[in-house]
Length: 214
Image 1 (tube, helix red, strand yellow):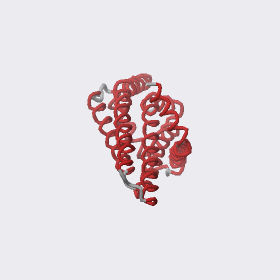
Image 2: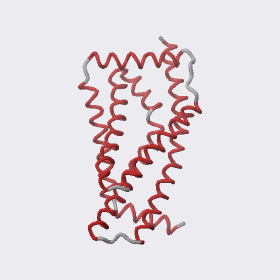
Image 3: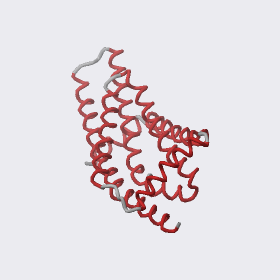
Image 4: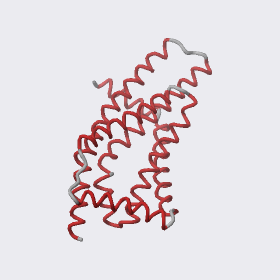
C-alpha cells in the first residue's frame, strides 16, 4: 500500500508539467466562457433566460426531476467522456482533441456560472454554488487527471514510435493505463451521486424558496 502511494507521488512529480498544463488549459476555458457571456447580445441573453425561467417555473411547481434518471444520465455521460479521452490517448493524432475537449469543458463551466451570475446576480451565484459546484469539485479533477494520463500515454507511444522500441514493454504501461481509467470511472460515480442526491436537492430547495418569496 505504501509502495503504491509512493509510485503515485513519483508519477505526479515526474509529469507535473503535463498536469499543470492541463489545469491551465481548463482554467483558460473557464475564463473564455465567462468572457463569452459578456459578448452575447441582449436578445441572446433574453432567449436563454426565458428557457431558464421556464425550468425554474417547473421546479417551483413541484415538478421534481427523477434522481435515478439524473444519476444514470450523469454517470453514463462521465463514462462516455472518459472513454473518449482513453481512446484518444491510444492514438497520437488524438492528442490535440484531448486539449480541445478539456478546454471546452472549462468553457462550459465558465459560461454557465458566468451567465447565472450575470443575469441573476447574487441569487445566480448562490444557485451556481449549490447546483454546479458540488459535483464539479469531484469531476473536474477526474477529467484533468484523465486528460493528463491520455496525454502522457500518447507522448510515450510517440517516443516509442520514433525510437522503434514498441515491444512487450508497452504492455505493462497499457495495463496501468487501463487500470487508471477504470479507477477514474469508479470515482466518477461519486460525482454522479452528488449531482443526483446533493446538488439537485439543494437546487430545487433554493429555487422553491426564491419563487415562494416572490
